[in-house]
Image (cartoon, rainbow, N blue to C red):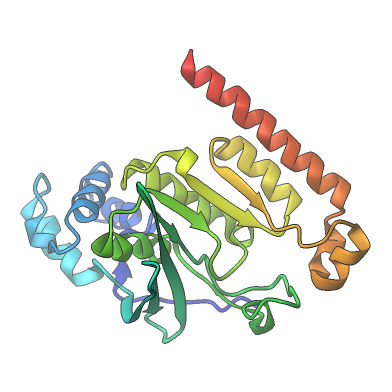
Length: 258
């Protein structure tokens, strides 16, 4: 069962909390984008440094929100340049974000949940079961923390959790990665073991985002043995959904080029 969470202070990057707060206090919602972009570009800034918003709003932000609601407790560096960040959440749970360095780009692997409900027999996270969904602010903070280490160009949802099981939050985070942090959709990849109805929804909501399918086995029977939840997602229907996503990505990409 997914744990219900109550965060205080709230992550300022949360895509639901900040707009709701602005509406509640009769501020224009467009201030949210100003706040997010400034803090994304200036990770060491405080709320009092944000230009273009009312002074009264700056004071209120400090009372209700945190620039970083998560903290980096461990930063491990390997000889190939990979950096693993262990992040502690407000409620004491921990997640990982990993920076992978390549020639000409840095890629960040982010988590979308604490634990995972898919039950893959070979996965350490799968043995935990599902503990909690991350909010969009906590996902985006992984990117903000990583940018303090190295400029990130690519993001992959391949950390803890099945991102399609936290769909609305992950979609909000993806949209903010492009709108706030300036990443191109083609540089964002979502890895899934295959949640068919969500793959089809993603094709409509974010067709330019890349999909990586964690297949793990060539047949439905073999796959069901190591990914128990895959019995609900037959391989033929799963591959059809992937094909449709690729087709939609091609169509939308062509339309944007015209």
